[in-house]
Image (cartoon, rainbow, N blue to C red; front, side, top):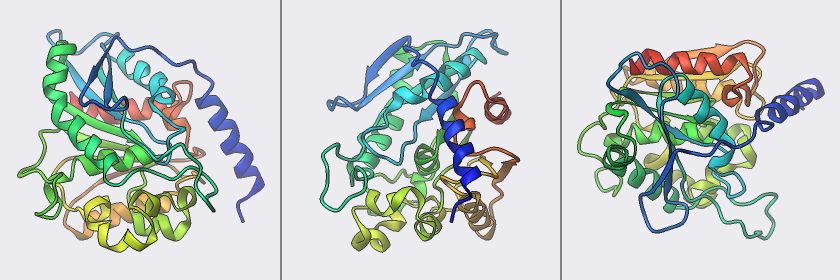
Length: 294
């Protein structure tokens, strides 16, 4: 049973993270025909360390891949990173249906295969979209980051060259990324399901428990190692939404595969301060991105 004090702290952290008003982008571009297939761009607002261009941060939002949670809740983080001198691309993607489902406690998480179709399509389209929409961005210095379910998608996007040969999402070689910074990611689906993370969202994302085992090699970051791409994970030790054990399992799987993944565990931090510009943890996130991007 979860400690009531931990639940209270988590609620306070969530309230703080979601208290910031949404920040409008400088531009929006579509990477497909569906209304959710769009990217919001934020121009660098701070002093860039390179007067000619700024690194591009691709931002993938969380929310358990469920429809009620869209990119708007992470726009304060996008603005925060832009004020640190980064160019930012905030990616939207198709999530679970908003329609109620029989015997479901919450909207179903994700769509198979559309959620993955969208992330793959967005990542493939971003170099050209960015060049046309945000010329201040240097796509040669791209770092992908994401929070929670978005952290999963960030790790997955960097591992597409490790997908099974028959996968339509597979890349023939590693994507041209400087690195990945995954924030409290749902990084190991087996452990996430064991812990009941987000009400079994990982299995829902794969189409239900009956598809979990067969589709795991196409979706689970812990099954797609090593990537050969610099990867850092930032996680709060006190996270009760996605427990730190999920990140620790992913890092252990990477080590077993011969790859070192950086893991920063923040004391006294839960799930939401990582995306809260008012929290000290957000500065840690910016620094981790900086170390890979500059």
